[in-house]
Length: 494
Ligand code: SF4
Figure 1 (cartoon, helix red, strand yellow):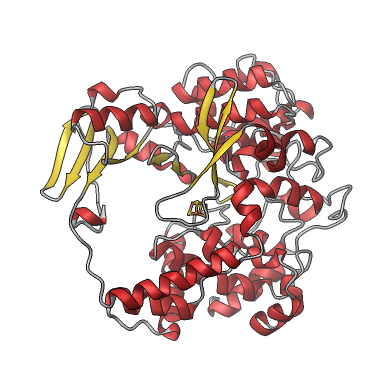
Figure 2 (tube, rainbow, N blue to C red):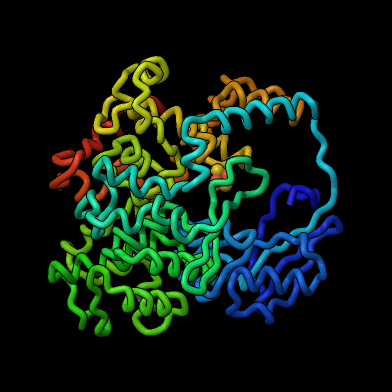
């Protein structure tokens, strides 16, 4: 998009019929999208490229789920890069906007091109020299299946357990050994952590950890090919894997506990590992058919039709389903979900540092070695207070949080150098911290305007009161009040 000369696109109003935007150096064109109705992401991309006879066109599109305004539908760009959370696909669907296509050929000017390139080279070196480089190259985020299982916090049967007895059948290692055929990368990334697979007639990219866990241990499925099939369906139809699996796993747990009967859901009877039914119900959700129409509103809204006991089992913060990381064993993540302005969201701070066991570094940066102890609440407010600013800057630079935060490659100093050499404007590290804090203050104020307060900055009851029963995280729960109070103090919030 930058090569078209536009920095931002703001879309208001609604088209009368299905349309797509085509943005070039010459301006913006509204095009008839009737041929794109119910097309998958990849089909949409290739039809638009054929219409305009240009294979270099880049496309961000919605699938059928977005067209039917499923409240957790996604926007997918370049075929497989997914804006997954909070139902942005439904927003595009509500505007009859199937896709945004861009083709630019303008040049980009840099203030100090050689100095900028030198800064980029340093970051590339840091990535390649990182001790997790090989593992991330081989498995990408799917390495977390085994890693989280080892420490007892892999969500099993909707977070009722943290240890998966069939991990060897569904791990990232297993995927790398069996169906993976090559590596893939996002634009301009030298880590290439994404993967391409061929399995039972499907050729596709992914899955990432969240999707792999969502469609294996979280719903009781031991069959890896089924998870790969679902990954492809969700990415091409435009559904968020975290929220889709939450509605399924929540129903499974509620039905197991007798809190919801099949007759409450038009006869739907879901049991752990019942893959045929899961496949069927996901199709219904995608097109809002039958019971899928209710499930397409998401777990939080669906649960309002049921008892308080069932509602308590929805694992969400501020209405957004939480990711597949059990906060009972990663406390800074728990704090991040609780305070994130858009709800159960790890990307607000991505405090992966707490899993690194770098005690001396923790003491130096966050005042206590405990900041690198995943089971401790101590030092986690300081860690999140730091990481949320780097996360926001990583977004501003349009970089990747796997690199910026999980690999701890970005910091205020190198971001300041990148910005100076790129734009010619001096953003000192202190100034960057100040404006990021102001931005986070603004998000807080917006949420206050929407009626939210500190009482919304919390976690589902399961994580506060119900300890895990086995494994290395056995017995642990989250003291969320302590962490949130400390975090508020750092922001000077009352
Ligand atoms: S940008 Fe991030 S997600 Fe994409 S390939 Fe690189 S490390 Fe992986």
